[in-house]
Image 1 (spheres, rainbow, N blue to C red):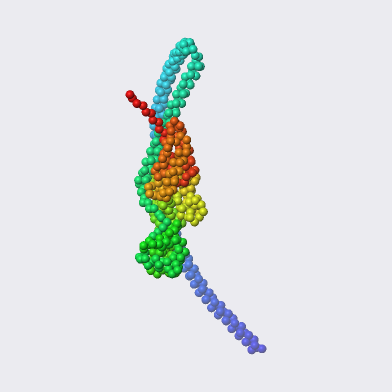
Image 2 (image 1 turned 180 degrees about the vertical axis):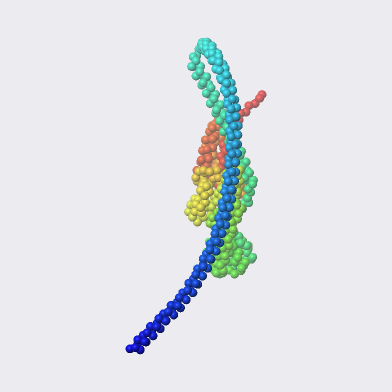
Length: 532
């Protein structure tokens, strides 16, 4: 038991000693930590004070700089405001000076107006006084004139045995008759002068256009002649049992005439395009020397392509010659097709180009639209390119083609009116008519058979001679003019106008002709006497 207590005491003493030792160790450790912490805190405080001092210095510098900047801005603003105030003061001063000058001018003007008003008042008073005197004198003169008029009227009525109203009516009637006669003479002179001047100017314009536009004319035919190197080639063209010639005629749609003409074959067809294809194909076959049905079909296809190229080139050349651009490519092809189209023996493409040039020249002289006239002249016969393939007149077909390919309404109107199918409404439409007639009327431009020509001349003279009062008539200028001599005792001067109109109407109804026919009625009175 004693040992146990001793042990407990020993453990308690050891614990106490351990506690005391731990306490002392912890105290030392804590004192060291506290010392380090206090030193760290003093360092932090020193750093904070140093940074605070630096911040303070920076803030003071920034504040000084800001003060300086604000002061500079304030000084600048003060200077600007001072300058603005000075400018305002100068403007005010100038305005005051201007107002002073205006006031002086107004004063001077007012003084002048007062002086003029006084002068006007004086003149007005004098005028009123003069007017009163004139009025009095006029009244006296009027009274005297009335007295004299009454005396004269009474004397005239006594001498003439007519009242005043009867005399007035007689004088008025005589003056009216004289005025009607003078007016009629004047109107007739003015109309005749205007007609002469218009005819002279029109003649000059047409003559100028014809002189400036000269074209070559070639009479087209319905046959083409192909030369052969020798007579043996005819048999090769015919082929065994006629196979070659039948194949060629079937492929091209033409007639081949092989007769006794030496070293020549005639290609006949009313369609010039088919005739041209056949001619080119035949020439190629002759040059190649191999003539059989398969080769013929091959050469015909090549000839068709070549003719298509020629058609396109001809259309483009027409566009180039007339300087017309922006035309639809299908219309260009149709223009090229007209190269192989004839009218009364005249090449339609050359005719269209000539009409374009003529219309443009006349439009320039008259101040009309030159481009419109040239374009309408070039396209006016475009319907002839398809009139053998489609139903309708070439005018109707031309209008349809122009509408289909988006030509302007003005061009369409010129095409529709160029043969008077409709009434022309524009100057350009009238010019197309004139240019068409000029081109068709050129010597050698068109041809007809001699029988038709003679028949038309006889019909013209027959129509003219059928009217009463006609002494004789003559168809002249290849049927483009009929000259009628009338009996002066049967037809008056006024009747000649009526006769010319009736003859022209009957010619229009009974005859078909290109261009126009001039009806010229002549009335002549001759008086003969002899001095003995």
